[in-house]
Length: 383
Length: 125
Ligand SMILES: [Zn+2]
Image (tube, rainbow over all chains, first blue to last red; front, side, top):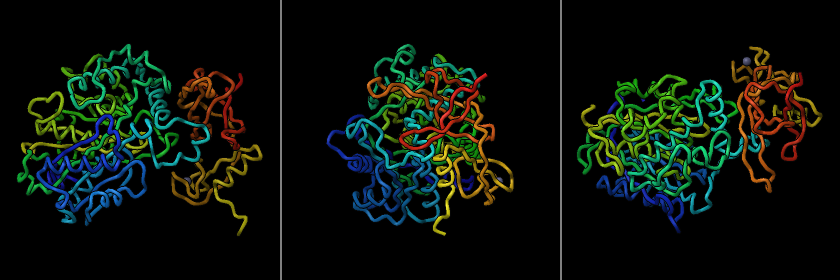
């Protein structure tokens, strides 16, 4: 979105459901529970929702399935599927739809039962024809090859990758909503089962159930709700490829472009951001995105995360809920970057609540580093 | 034209004869891969097919870890051919963990998943 849309929409409700294991529930059950939680948070109900923004892992028409399940007849839907970044991307389309009067209450929602359903990624996505014969294990083989290239070009080490997972766990340790809260050391990560060199199972996100939802309205009525509004100051997307073999530079993601445009729309820079919520499907993601979003120079991400610098008490709070590595990862994590950023700004984060947060960044990643979407969220003070 | 062939059919058809053909744009003269009906660089639609040199280097690589009883570990990599295009493949003839970035490799046509496919081996010398 452009600077003209800065602050035109606000998040007035967030909710989640089924974190960890949602026994006996389908993905759509978890989706619906998340919707109810977010609407309850906003003091609204499903009859108020006239804009629905949803995609799911297992269907090709998930927004229709979700509307039917919820018993609503939305006048605006967006089911754009760009993988886990979809839900950050919906901040843009929801803001546009709200601003244009195409809907008045936007519900962004997701749910998954992938852990209890099968314990692995369930997806309607087809393996790419020119990659499938070589049996890459998706998505880890793709991220492993990006990590290998980063290590080759910049001397990034497995220890530095491990420190990303250790920092995420340190945040999760304080978050009662997080799935993995036990101690985790660098040695634990390095010594864990190797799944796709150079990544061990502890370099990989969790496989959990869970859902999340966000309620958005136009800014002019955002102060009429129970919780402090969180404004969308800027959001932007950039898509670079679908198949990992088509990625032009394995060490540079389109987050460089999405970030620059999101910052420009919001009129702030990386140095202004007080809490950073990144889609950490694998430890390399955090390093890549910190570089590409401008928190450090290209190639310096490894040193930037080393030794607790992004852990509690470090120089930059990153993934303050524990991230996809330790809090929750139900197939697609993107919506939770927005929820945690919003809660840090509202002051009701479930784990460590940072002090006086006015500006936070949420970054979604989709596919195999394919789709990058960055959003800048702000408090009333930032308008 | 019932015997007209699309780009995928041309590529796969050559593989069944043991040949690796690469699509090349007649307008900007750049190669591309995977095969398609237009050039992704300049968007020209005049595409010709050239015999690949088969020479390339490993751009990046990983080992897919798999239990021995299910076939054991194997290599997955992305090779950059001298023509400037990249393709996913695997390097055979050495241990999967020995495949290294920048290693010079040579293509050969063999089978993967029961169908003809481009694989690589370390270049000699
Ligand atoms: Zn061309």
